[in-house]
Amino acid sequence: MIHAMSGTEALQRRRAVISPGSGLEHWGTEYFGPRHAKEISAGPQSLLTEMAPNETILAHFHSVDQFQIYAAGSGLLGRHEVKPLVLQFMDHDTAYGPIIAGPQGLSFFALRAKTDSGPVYLDKPGYKEKLKPSKRRAPLTEQLVLSTEPVLENRKEVSWEPLLTTETDTDGLAAHMLRLGGGMTAQGPDPKIAGGYYLFVANGSLHRAGLNYPRWSMIVVQPEDDALEIRAGKKGLEVLVLQFPSEENA
Image (cartoon, rainbow, N blue to C red; front, side):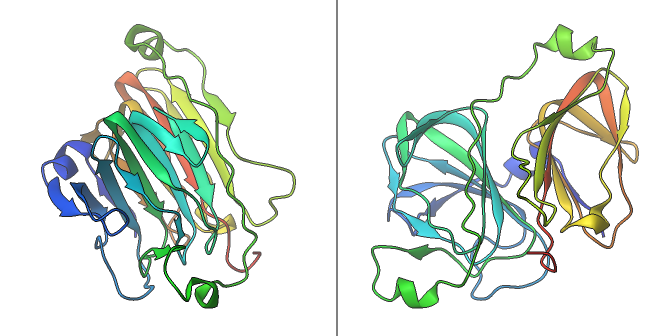
């Protein structure tokens, strides 16, 4: 089943939450799945976290694979500067952080193909006993540059830009920036060759089934679904195509 969520609709549900990683109040938005779950379960989970100025979320790991998109503000991921747009993939049971927001805050999305059982923090006793075998991949992109509005609208050629793919990734892990001019189309990947994928609208809009999905919208294509035709809105589209690794080939 394909899941779709408009960024405009999702952000109407933004609310203040207490961060389990800092104990401070910041803002959270659920796109798919619950913000907190007690066990791993089927179905996508996608969350937007908007950190308070100078807030620190301590180092931790999750029990499922995830992509993380740093989409607004600025800050540090460990020793690495992050600002719009920076993308990271993290295998399950792979520690990362701390995440430190700058003075104007830091907003990031966590995109998961399965619902996670919650973060495990490295400052808490017993975390080593919860770690499971993993490839421990955590590649991080450089800052991704988006097109200006007229350049994007008038683009004439389809552009697939690889972001995280390496020759050693034999389980289907891949990430691309797809750039389309106004009204252009491209065929999405076959979701059956790996673990399905997310489409994250970074710029412009995506048109599907008579609806327009603006910036910060998401579509989830699961392994049992057919490949999706990706269609740009009138002003063009820049979309992250984020393909999860296959569990069978991990």
